[in-house]
Structures are given as C-alpha cells and as structure tokens.
Length: 388
Image (cartoon, rainbow, N blue to C red):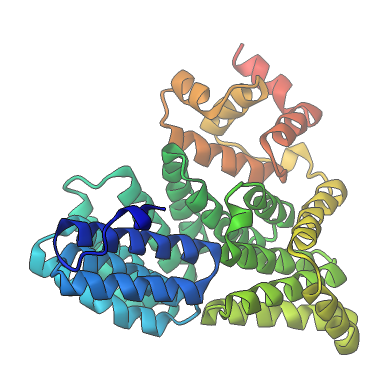
C-alpha cells in the first residue's frame, strides 16, 4: 500500500523512501520464510540504494542479504556479503552499524570454524558498545557471543550469554528474538541431559505468536524437539518431527546450516538405531506429510509426555544459592520477575537468569511447576523459616 503512495521517482527523497519500503518488504518476506521472494526484494533495494549513493541504506540491505544467506544455510556466502558493509561502516565512521554488523559476522564466521575471526569481530564490537551501546545492540552482542561459546565447546558460557540476550530482548518486548533464543537454550539443556527443560523451552517458543509465522524458526524448533524426543526414548515421534522439518525446509527452498546438518544427522542416526532403518524412514516420510499445525502439536506433545513421566529428583539433591532461595520464595508467593527484582534490588535480566537456573535445577518446565515442586519437596517450609 505504501508503494502505491510513493512516486516511482528515480532520484531524490521519494526514491530513497521507496527503496527503504522495498527493503522492509524484503525483511517481511525473509521472516515469513519466502527466501526467494526476499532475495528479489533485497536485490531491488540494493540496486536503488546504490544508484542513489545511499551508503547507509546499502549497509542495511547488504547486512540483511548476509543474514538471508545464513538462513539459506550458506555461512560462507554470508561472510562474503558482510565484507562490504563492514568496509562501508568504517569508511563512514558509523560505529553503531559497524558493531551490529560485526556481531552478525561473528555468527557466520564461527559456523565455518573461523574462531579467531569471530572472536576478533566480537572484541571490536564490544569496544564500540562500551561507549554507549543500546539495549538492542547488547542483546545482539550477547546472542553472538553465545554462538561463539557454543561452537567453541563451552555450553555453560553459551547458556549465560544467551540468557543475558534473552533478558534484554524480553525487556524490549521483542518476541521474535526471544523465540529465536529458546531453541539455542534448549540445545544447552539437552547437552546437559535436562530433557524436560529442553522440551519445555521448545514448547515455550512455539507458544510465541510470532513463531508460527516464521518458517525458518519453526524448522529449527522442530529439529531441536526431534533431538529431544530421540534422546528421551520417543523415537517414532522424533522421526515424524524430523520429517516435518524436512518439509518446511523444502517449502523455503533452504537447507540447514552445516552445524545444523550435523546435528540432524546425529538425531537421524539415533532414530535409526532405535527403530531400524526401514521403520525410521517410514516414520520420517509420514512426518513430511503432516500439516504444519499438526507437526507443531506433536512437538508440544513431546514436552507434555516428558513433564508427566520425568522422575522427581530428591530435595536433598537440589543445591540452591542464597540468592536463588530468595528468588524462589518470592516466585512461590506469585510475584512477577519485575516485582522480585524490586524486592531484592536486582535487575529484570538478573531475575530472569535466576528463574531459568531454578527451573533447570528443579527439572520443571515452567514457573507454576517450580512453585508446585518447591512446595511438594519441602523447600518452601525451609524458606519460610529462613525468611519470615
């Protein structure tokens, strides 16, 4: 509708506005999983911005074209595309855009095992952000730093970084990036054999309104939940979810990243070991035929099954820090994260991290379940005596 109102002038402010609208349509198509259409819109926007000499606009569009290459499973192409906006930002002295681009570049570089380049990019970005990075800039920085930690074999550092990023995106009310972070945190939980927690994080992501509208995100969520299902003895369901993810990738004309492909191969191998090759192939093919809504329902069911069947760890095995005990007491009383932060003089981000740690230690998927578990295991009585 906006394009019908903006004259198709070849020069001037109207042309710059038209180019920006075209760039934004590319973003919308990108998030919707229509990668071919997004490519076309981005290329048109880049051509217009180049002809107008709009360097800042070129940086924006090239950055998004690189992000799209990552979405298409081609981090090598993404790294090539990032070179131009990084150079342009330095030439213009645009430190804000430079920091953002370096954070994105680090993710593509680490996906190619170019760790030194990824670390250097993050160090350069951090040096810029120290002089006044916004909440959103730091959210992106911590997300990228978590990726580097994860690919470097340090899952605990990755978890801390991603929790920090999630808290900042929650502060901004950005459902898209919160949902993007949840499968990453789920992978960390699965690596620690916390299958209930891992499945619950995927279920939480699927509950976000934006998640169902973004095919690339849905494919990732189905993949991770398939891995959780395979690890928890739900092999047939895992195969169906993997097949459903196959269908989504085909719809987008995309492939998983090299790291994700390796992860999917491990999941497929575990399924075949449990079911046998013919049965695994049959279940995976059945998953490919599932309507997307039904596939999401099956992914949610994995979390429900685990929540019902997971053994309850003895209270004696749960070791909480004093601050975690403070947070748990207030959580059981029904306070929100912001109310807990106000009572304990903690930031919202810090409270969110403590709550996440409590869910993991208690082996439960939600705040309500944590409150119930605390009462059932006698933790609340101890807290009430300690903090009347």
